[in-house]
Image 1 (tube, helix red, strand yellow):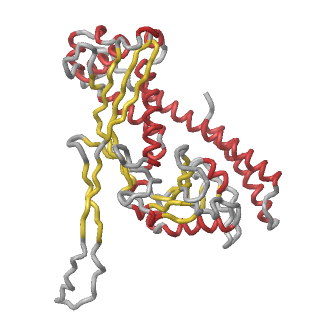
Image 2: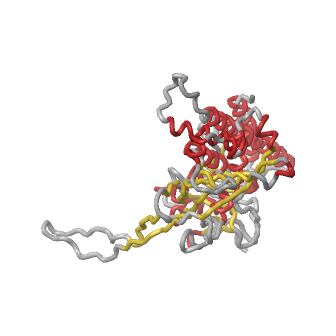
Image 3: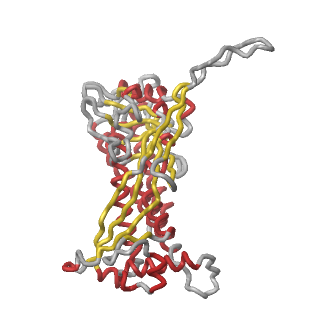
Length: 409
């Protein structure tokens, strides 16, 4: 098992070496040479690989902790199970995953059965299992970790009131004066309507019988990955039509083109102070009240470019490496996050990143996860199928909390 602290130290050493290359060029009042740039890119690629290793190891350990916490204690072992009904549902669901309906006792079947489908039907997963599936998705999807996530327990949609037009400023007046009447206050509403999301997973019958790991964990991991990737794409670039409205989709319902700023020139992002100054302009387009929670959001290929940019004001590099595990790398003193699904095609009129307080992106889940076991469909290949279903929606709720970067034509 890798030592995460050792990996972080290795990563810090690589970042320090890369930073030294930039400092050497800056102190000599010159740009980095081709050889220096090649070395810099190699060091940062190594640092990024270590970053990915740390993230995978942390996710694996968290999932192992979750799995260890899902197995209910045996009845009557003195462990103090306060909810025997939930324990029965958990045991029944595990038996169902491994052996299907025929493996259930009459009590277990009654605990899970939500209909009268002789072919296997739909079963509602135990509540603990559903919560862990959603948590695994959180670990895999960058934006869910930063966004505001709400759960819709009743009703088909969630309405959120919005302040469309605020009052004018207060007025100086006399002791008995009340000021002039103000009719500017206007309210609106954002409506979230969770949309269905589904994925099918096939698992070998032999694996279900003989696996050392809990079969639930195997199914959960694969579903979590598939749900996570689909959600991430929609949160970034979804068009809002029966799916979330993405951050990089210009819309009056989310973030309009009024929040776009230029990054680059002539369909490219040259490594010149002009590009660095545009990032500075983007930072100061965002109100300072959002800076405490603001993050840059880029694809990793754009981070590779930004690491070499200077601003013309004081001719310093905009990227600064973190000096410890609790102090991340920054761009213009603000941390950044990386997603594989941020647009990264550098050409005219394309979006390539943003700065924002992502708490103002709301995600609403309808927690009615259903799992269907396909008993006979994959019999010829000695496999068992599982279909997972989830409903979710998302959209930006306050466009002034975001600044989107667009490459000019």
